[in-house]
Amino acid sequence: MKNQLVKNYNDIPLMMTANDIQNIGFSRTMAYQILNRSDVPVVVIGERKFIKKDSFFDWLSKQTTGGENYGNAQNDI
Image (cartoon, rainbow, N blue to C red; front, top):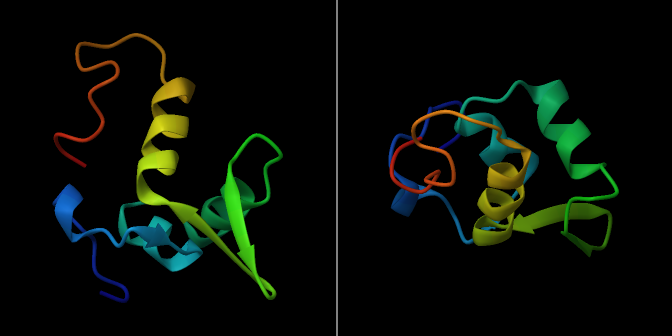
């Protein structure tokens, strides 16, 4: 799925990398900034950082304020 925007939640891997975060529409810089935040629950394996898909979307929904679909991030990306 490299360099291809993902449009379905089920197509996202269970353990997301910075590249996977980019594939849902974030820039490369933003993907690495997200993985380096202290409030993001990352899994470190060797020198690589991962985030569980569910944890990422839970974290992301907590960053969201207002809007019609508030808290409904899993339906569409």
